Length: 197
Image (cartoon, rainbow, N blue to C red):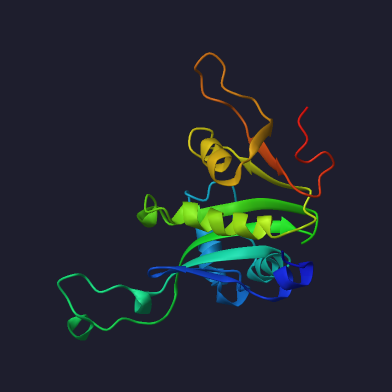
C-alpha cells in the first residue's frame, strides 16, 4: 500500500521491452502534450497555455508512456555490435492523467497512445499501471472516468479496471449510444465495499 506522500512525491516506473511508464512529470514534454491536445485524435480536449498545463500536471498524478530506443531488443538475426546506434532519449508516445486527492478519490482522464502504436497492447499496459497505483491506495473510495467511446472504451475499462457504468445513455435497439459514459469502481474505503446487495 502506498501513502499519499509516496504517490505524490516518489515517482514510480515500469518497463516492458523498449517501453517505459513513469509518474515522473519532469519527463513529460509539455509542448508535445499540448500538440496532442490540439490534434483530432485527442478529441475530448484542447490545448491550454503551457504555464497552465505545467500547473495542471503538477496538480495531477500523471503517467507518461515512453519508447526508450536504448532498451530495444536486437533483432534475432542481428547482434548488438552490428545494430545501428540509437539515441537514448525517451520518446513520448502515450499519457494518462489522474485527478486525485491521493487518498479517497481518483478521476482518470486524458488516456492516449499515439495511433501508430495502437494495437500493440501499450494502452492496456499503461492503464494496468494506473490500476496498480489505484489498488495501492488503502483509503480510496472510488475511481471514476468519463468516455464517449462506447464501442471500445467502455468494454476496455470494464475489463482492465473493473469499472461499471454509473450514469449513461446506453444504446437502444441496436443504435449507437449517445453522450458520455460515466464509469466507476468502488474501492476499499467506500461504505459497503464488497458487500452483496
